[in-house]
View 1 (cartoon, rainbow, N blue to C red):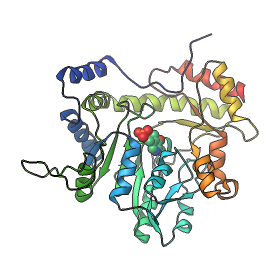
View 2: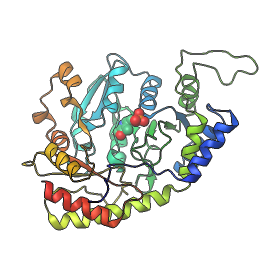
View 3: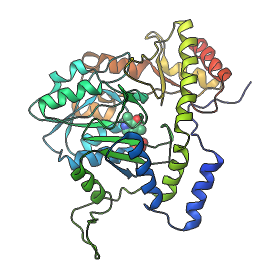
View 4: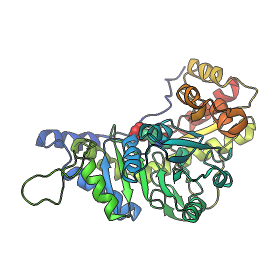
Length: 370
Ligand SMILES: *Cc1c(COP(=O)(O)O)cnc(C)c1O
């Protein structure tokens, strides 16, 4: 009996620990030079004009909606399948999320279904680059331009993902990233809001820091009602240290994903994720569908008993209690793919440190647990 293989382990090495301790010893803890360095690193990597570090991914989405003036009476188009934060923030600014079903091969919003969801109240589309794979972002941008809608990319899981070589998060009015331990690299809790619009970026800087007008020389003036969405410098130091091996982390996951793909396709029991040729997959999550006849929750329990951590990858958001109580949408009829992804979806372990043998053990255990 080997040791337990958890679903996720963040990549933390001695250099990371040293980088964080240095900041703690310096006594300068909040939004300083390490946060600035994080912003510079992401700007350079993504080729985006502006990046602002924010305390977590959910708040980046909330802030983007606020800055675009989206609120009561407005509608925002979101995929029906994602992590709940995507739709929660739309509710929290007082707007209405309009759910659109996904493509079952990629788990991303189905661009064919977007236009029929647009009404006179629609203000924005919020595509999610699910599990580290770009949505059909080029097509989504074209739809948004045709209908004069804003685009906020929820790229929480997709740092490093591209469509035709261009990084996600740089297509829309805003791109949002998360650095939670489940994402590519982490600072515990953290996020970044990316934009090419200097006026939007100025608003981000003011609103993340109590409304303080940064351009005021000398004294301090407050030009708006702001929040405290700052990141700490010791968190940024952790990110910056991990950033040095980002490519190594992607390469490692790619190798593990290739083993999953070949081993699992040999068994033919589970539906595998499809990667379109215009995109790379960064494998934030390796997500498969068990057969619809199988009881996915029972599979999770059986795998845990055999020493392997898995869970369901995302939610059919309108199917969750909070949205059912408010909108009572018939998900089986309206969002059959999102409901299937929620009910039959299974996230498998994928992270630095797993061996080829571990992946084979996960595969054998999974097949034996269906
Ligand atoms: C993780 C995630 C978020 C939330 O990010 P946090 O940093 O945990 O707040 C939002 N959207 C998606 C799609 C996510 O996967």
